[in-house]
Length: 175
Image (cartoon, rainbow, N blue to C red; front, side, top):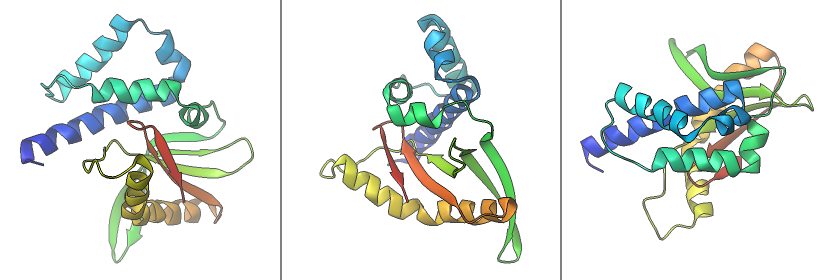
């Protein structure tokens, strides 16, 4: 992928993450209740803010899947303890590192979760969606494991599940 295309993909990922954060803060119904014109103004405003000139359907596809997918509905349930874009600082290997958790919550059964949203899509069309998710899970395991380690120290528990969620497929992987 060329450098300008990579930058646009990063901007698209940022915009999708910001919309996910807004939906997480207000609930899926909040987005569903918005008129199409309001949704387009929100998305167009973010595209302008991030200087994204391309007319892309990825943002709309991600939101569509979030609205339709039962896993997304479960992730965005109203909960007593939930954090989105939660920054943690960890002292590792002699240096301080900032880690930003896309989504962290305790479910109704008391289980802690860290969910990392991935807006990448498969480039190799020979891979099935499941194979793509498995490859991504391998690639991102250390990242999520480091989040888990830091948060388990803060919460004084080893019982934290980690997962990836792919709104463009939609799919998810629980480790």
